[in-house]
Image (cartoon, rainbow, N blue to C red; front, side):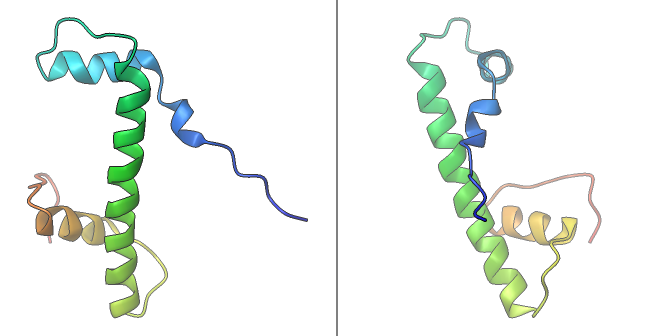
Length: 85
């Protein structure tokens, strides 16, 4: 038995991407934007997850906590508010 992995990035709808663009101040988006945005989001999440795995391996744990995510995002220069450490 082998699990077939589907491309979950397709679950990010065009409407969701458009909403994010509007929040960033974009008024109009071309249809070419949606696949490019999905690709960039996937690459960014993969790199963040790789950093989280490094933190977990260093601390000899298997469970990701919110503090792990906040730590990695802060290390990358993305300040996250609302989470105390």
